[in-house]
Image 1 (cartoon, rainbow, N blue to C red):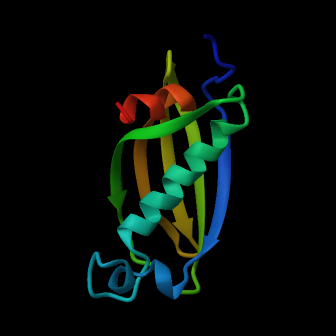
Image 2 (spheres, helix red, strand yellow; image 1 turned 90 degrees about the vertical axis):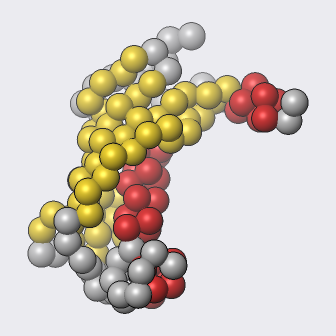
Length: 128
């Protein structure tokens, strides 16, 4: 099946850092700053949403790889802007470059791969 997903497609998501997004609450550290797992979740969400509406009914995507660098801490109240861009499409594999910034500049980058799935077939394969 051919999907209408092309390189260059971008998506922008914005999130204000909340207390529940901090490392101390998430359990990834003791600092009261934007947690790396929370940043990764925002990055994956941004990539996911960039292609979800391009897929036929019954199809979605799952993250299969992410290589992330968290470069700078952000405090609660900071506004995070996350932008994903499709850099390569290999059949059902969609490659992304993702950057996240706050008011002070870049806080993180990632290379991410998502795999297009048929929801029913995927879930059926897990229940065998």
